[in-house]
Length: 74
Image 1 (cartoon, rainbow, N blue to C red):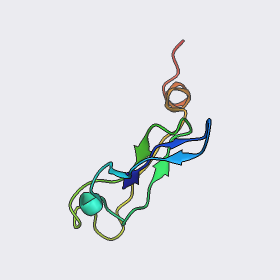
Image 2: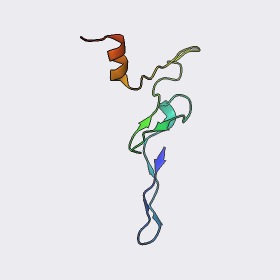
Image 3: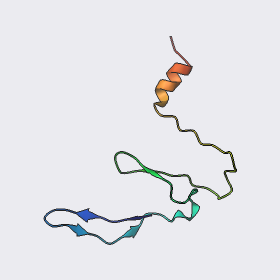
Image 4: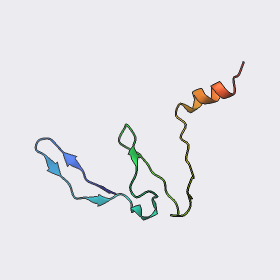
């Protein structure tokens, strides 16, 4: 994964590409997502055989709301 700086003022200038990280240890090729703020990535890192066929990953959004629903406090 590479990154490059871009300036738009006063003229468009593109910086030199730089390596962010090597993708050799990231599963699924380069399947990833970028956080809405553009500052973070979500990727799976591990050994190629760490997840066998049928393995799953669960991501819970709004975690606190889900916790309140499952374990109500009075």
